[in-house]
Amino acid sequence: MAGHSQTPPQALVPGRTIQLSVLARSLLDAGISHQLAGRIADAIDAFAGAAEQSALDNDSSTRSEACRRLGILHHLRGEPAAAAALCQQALLMARGAGQDHLAAEALNALAGFDLERGAMGMAEERYQIALQLSAGNSGITARIRQNLGILANIQGGIDVAMEHYLAALAAFEEVGDAAGLARVHHNLGLLNVAHMQWTAADEHFGRALVTAVAIGDRHLQGLCLINQAEMHVAHGRYDVARQHAEEALAIFDGLDARLEQAVAYRVLGMIFRENNRPVLAESRLRSAVEMAVGTSSRLTEAEANRELGRLYERTGRTVDALRQFERAEELFIGIGARTDWEDMVARRGRLALA
Image (cartoon, rainbow, N blue to C red; front, side):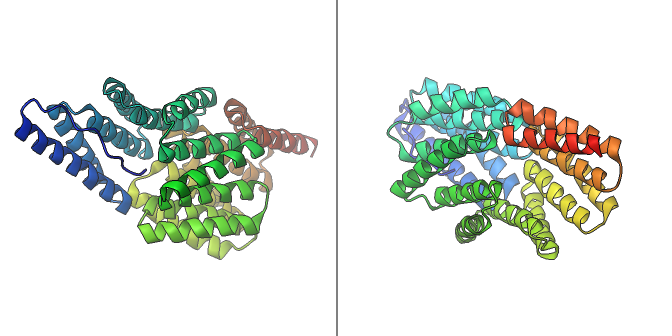
């Protein structure tokens, strides 16, 4: 997420307060640079320092941004309680400072946490409130519209998702946000994958990856690589898929991004399954399920259970396959992923008949 200029605090002791405010902002900017480059421990230290310094300065705006960014890093590390607490604090700070754009940013982050844990109704509500608060700020509006597109895509609202993504693209172009544009292209790639429009998906992932490398965004590089790997699996290019998946996993390991590590293990499990290496496939897919549970990512948990069920179906473990499909169906229903739960119903029906 791009940083924003903040309103400085009221100067009770002018010279001293201005100096401290500059220090807090400097720590915040350093944290952003560390995060982009994948130095997560350094980013956490910098954001924590910025939050502490801005509290001393009575600078609610900078403190709100520091707490929000710190919360997002805890979320990526699979620490949902700490993440939510920090972003709730960021929301309170923003409202106290009368900064609607910062309140929108905090709500956008909290809605993202809701989405990951499958609370789609709460996510939708928070995104819509954030959208209202972001009026007049194209950059924040673009990020919220993009996330509304993700939500619509998960729930099968393809036309709605496309509408949000195109609106986000236009807004990011207006403010010249290359990183934002790259993330929308990444999500458009996912939208095209869902409809097996492989050429278009590959073009979007490729554009996103080129930009991610150019700006040094390691997290986005990993996302592009893991989704390209899944495309290669669909086309039977297992060696290339494994290379991409292992490269993505190395990036996520370096970032301590446990949510994405679970996705990488799922894709590696799919690759080993298709290469007729069932023991390795089961190990990777079970790891994916466990990591998804540990990070409260219900969508990733559902997808990993589905792939584990497909492995058991292939290896003749019918009862185990049905159990995994039932669990995946339950999770997909919970998050409103209609297309996916219908797929689970069909798979269970075919397996029961067989």
